[in-house]
Image 1 (tube, one colour):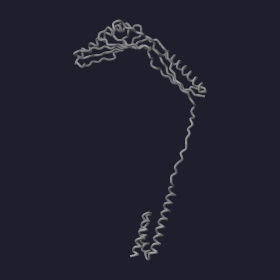
Image 2 (spheres, helix red, strand yellow):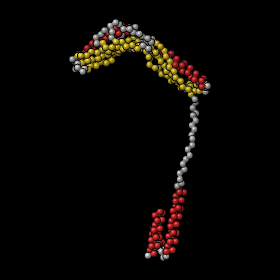
Image 3 (cartoon, rainbow, N blue to C red):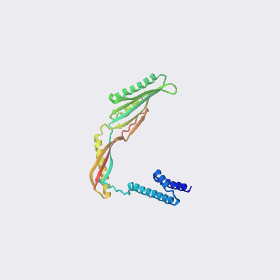
Length: 280
């Protein structure tokens, strides 16, 4: 019984080591059969076998470590980026020129309501628009400068029909504006009008505005460079853009029977400039 117990203990010890390091169980059992003649030899051989298994495991682990060393964590280093581009200064400016307008954009609106039929409403508005066209032609407006900008007819909440119509007119010259406004204001179904003064040819005015903008931009650049203790170099880039003309007088006229007062005023032409200088 003791021999059987010793053999079982030996195999148990060897089994534990084999599970750790995948040893051959058949070989372990054969060694156990030969080594169970007495208790002392059994214990010595079991301990020797266990120690050999442990040592083998350590050697195997060492070989694995040598073949697969632990990855080194790179040391982060500070990066300094040196900008080699030249130092620059960018300035912008706007040049303005006041000019007298030489034509008018005029919009006229007409409308009627409470008609039992849609056709009747739209016919009524068309008659008013035609009367306005006739009046404009009498005051020297060219037919190609008169355009119908829209007409519409719709049913109202009460079941009747209403209609609207409008004209877009270009009037060369501005002196006839008060008379034209008085003429159209007396037409039937006239609702309202609005107009703006414009300049037909802005080329010369824009050239002057651009010169003013460049002078202003250069003045800014010289002033800033002087305050910074540097000198202006060559112009690296330049861009310009024309701004929309802004009328200083924009008038809205509603129908009235005592005549129209028209203040013409002036219109501004604007040029925008953007310049980048190299600094020395």
